[in-house]
Image (cartoon, rainbow, N blue to C red):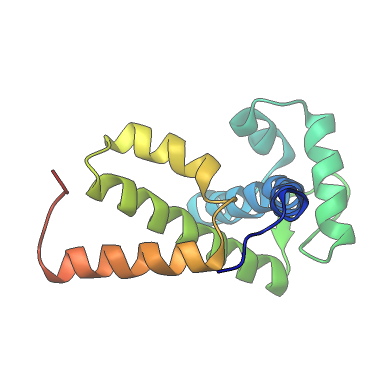
Length: 145
């Protein structure tokens, strides 16, 4: 059995932290486009509880990374790559929420907790969660007691 060094563990955490904001933004942009047909800077600022300047900074990074595009004073849209990342993030979020619901966590707390957990779970852990949730669904179990 191999044991990860403490530095490797923190490297993984730092990488997840770096990606967390980017993932939250593409997920929210996709949600707004689906719900309202567009994602405006002011809407993103309100939803995240930050200033428009903070949103503009995040959008600039998304554009630089090839995940979003917009024109000055226009709505923000995702590139194909951004849409794929948003789908992946939404799927991961739903998986973590469903897992927490299986454990008996309330819907509100499952949504809040998933928002943090989803960015830090490894692909292996996510795969195990998926197997657990799928197995629970096949057995028609509503929650673990």
